Image (cartoon, rainbow, N blue to C red):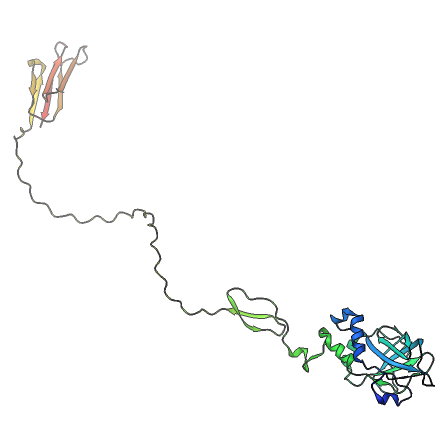
Length: 320
């Protein structure tokens, strides 16, 4: 059996058997409608579409076991990916999706890993070839060089992109990390994306504001320590002589019980008893005293008195 290209490529109709991996416009639309989630992220399947005819050129129909292998060489070498799947053929037309089958032996005793689109990142465009085996037939020749579809699918996986605009990821600044304190500014970025901070420089001086309102009076402070005494002032001038009657001169008064002496005067402002003499038997019973009084009219009275026989009392009064 010989698959031939579907439709548009005349070159394919001249070869007796040649599978095809080209995506026709109607096939792409059918793929997107059948897998709506693929509109969100790159699909992990590679569509393969072709026509299958017998040796007589008649299109075939039915279920066929197909093995798909990917090589880095157009001829010879070992496959780096292999899978098998049951493919439905209708009037010669079939569609299969690489990555949807069961991994098989790579031909070197090891089983193929699952299809990973990142595999194409390490292979420059144009150096990946597809080999197809149907049922028990040998692998068809020649192998078919894959177009740009798997490479475009890998490019959509931005997290695994190896270059951006031809530059490696190391050529770009990593994501910034961290923040600066409120009183500092960013002055640089480290190789790991960390921010370098430094105190912010002072801004230009602003205009002078309006004067503020007067504050409340503060509390009185504590009294200070006493200062050194000042020098004596100059003597003042003598005052004028006052008017009025002259006061009497100081005077002594006396009272004696032997002479029944008693004084009575209102000529003095102040009088004081200055001396008391007692002659005789002072131990005898009876009253013996000197008495000074000033009545409500300002009169001074000095009295010497003794009620004991043979006892003499003498009193002295000084008045000013």
